[in-house]
Length: 170
Image 1 (cartoon, rainbow, N blue to C red):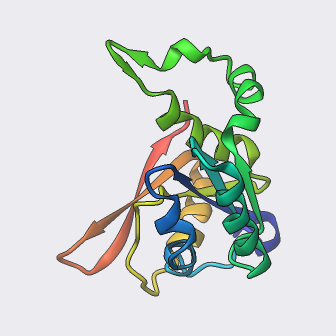
Image 2: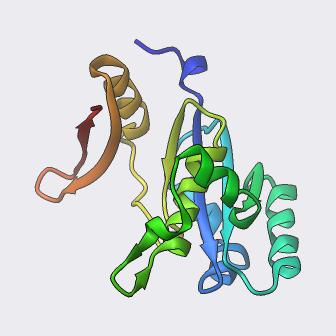
């Protein structure tokens, strides 16, 4: 069994120009974290592709002051480091006529900047239903036990229980 101290699970979510107000002005950020029902090692926010950085940063600072999150980062401040670390180029995100850079740099920022051994990453438009199933602890235990790299939650309506899908490390 993995000890609580060695689990160090970080939580990160993201906001961008299209939803930062919903995430930071309303109670969405607090709700996302609360519904995980877990005492995280750290709680962070990635801010990605916003027009009015000083205003968004002021709201992020307030979230830190209120204890909702511990830290926030602007993905643009770390993008060069991230691309280098993961050996990717800016052009790697182009597919046909679509540029997926701004969609992809946020999650990569969370992976790069999280300090915990494990990371729970939910996009800002994602909410899970509150429940008593200890899905994060179960995921960590299973990852430790069978050496998996990634866990994904899926809902089974018929048994009213959260199940985990495990992807094996290559």
